[in-house]
Amino acid sequence: MSKINYAKQFLENGIAVIPLRHRGKEPESAMMGGTWERYKTELPTEYQISCWLVSGWQNYGVVAGWDNLAMIDFDNAEAFELWQIYYEQQLVRIYELKTPPFTVKSARGAHVYIRLYGTEANQKRQGVDVKVHGYVVGPESIHPSGAVYTAQGEEFHFPQVFHLDTFLPPELFPHVAPSASVGHLEALQMTFDKPSQGVYDPFAVASGHGGAGIDLLSTVKASVRIENMFPDAVKTSGDGRWLAARCPFHDDKKPSFWIDVRRQLCGCQVCGMKPMDAINLYARMHNMSESASVSAMAQEVGVWG
Image 1 (cartoon, rainbow, N blue to C red):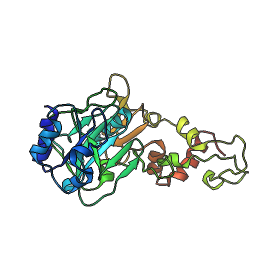
Image 2 (image 1 turned 180 degrees about the horizontal axis):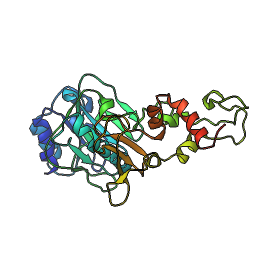
Image 3 (image 1 turned 30 degrees about the vertical axis):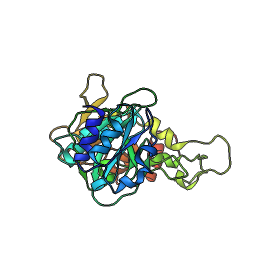
């Protein structure tokens, strides 16, 4: 489908588009006779779209917010691949999705189109921008690098998402504070000195004394591999990346617990739990907090206490 036909199809679905510069992301204000923000609440006409894009020279943007339209903008291929794994393992079942969301591959990542239930604000996650307000570059536009924004199928399907965290779990894509770029347990990247005898909670003795110390969190993660906790797990992929095991959280007659060896993540297709790393898993198996599980795991592998 051509650039202009995609733009007109967005219009048919009640979604505004705007002209952007050739091989750019900046709005063509002169073409619109003003700023692009008017199209947050006003649809262009089909004639305007034809005038903007008939030459095939201009890029165009798809405006978020129309009927709660939002775009999940994955900054890189790795983040998008991680989300695809979660989509295939969980979201298809949770949302009973028979058709994948409209997705556009970008130069580095991808744009996934959804509709939100209720009002949300723009969000910054690790590796992801959630565009609730604003716009993204539309399919068949050209990136400054020369790469084409390519739609993965022509069917416009924007699934209704009742809670963004179920569609984009913070365990995989942590929120990024304005002044920081860390999240999940990595937000606890504190340096610990080994405590004096009798002190067993490493989170209670964060070092303020300098020196090399021990990055306990990373040490535990590097020392404990999920597949070693399931000796009966079997390979489900030729490269050995994916394993299946019996879930420890329900009476599992058929192995439904999946393990991603490369990313060190796991979950259950039956329980519907969000993906877990080794520390999350240990905490859930032993009914303890994540901080307590780090301490217990550290002692088990001999890096603490």
